[in-house]
Length: 136
Image (cartoon, rainbow, N blue to C red; front, side):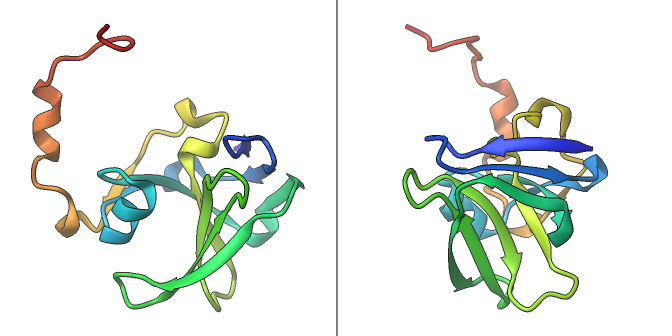
């Protein structure tokens, strides 16, 4: 599937080829902190499947909960996370942030990873009141 995406401020734009079957939710502690949310949704693409059409992401490398070194690619202007990738992977793959993809509605997660780190209250949100927009 061909996709396009961008950061929040528009300084970074990209296109990629992804397999919708490789869309997933990650519950690891790193994804919780880096997304400032309960989990992060990603879809996998390979190095030759990702092209930045505007701008270049800034990267920093960290040691993930798994113990692996992970490069985090993001917009240096607005901070939007675009991808994570294992350092030294061959072939190189990227976990693209589904929230930065224009076609995100067409990429429902097919699996969950790091479920052992999932926030325990997460299953209960289905019972919360729901509003189409802000409640006020």
